[in-house]
Image 1 (cartoon, rainbow, N blue to C red):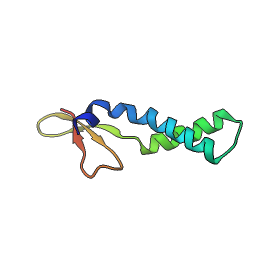
Image 2 (tube, helix red, strand yellow; image 1 turned 120 degrees about the vertical axis):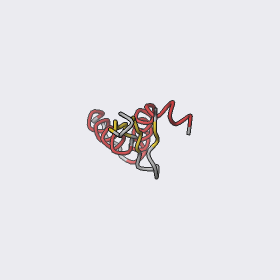
Image 3 (cartoon, helix red, strand yellow; image 1 turned 30 degrees about the horizontal axis):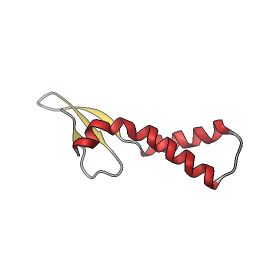
Image 4 (tube, one colour; image 1 turned 90 degrees about the vertical axis):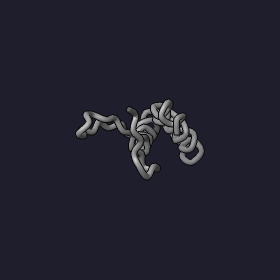
Length: 75
């Protein structure tokens, strides 16, 4: 979990590259902008989100992700 906290911001670009490689194998298209746009949207949907939540103790930064059950506190 500590590794995820340090490098959660790398998941978005890694997902874009993975989706680009998958789309190259599945769909043969010459329009790079269309392919990159679709891959960026898919990566944005599946990437983790950083939220700032106001609590009684103050503001807390949390990371939420589709594949995590509970949010992770950064502070």
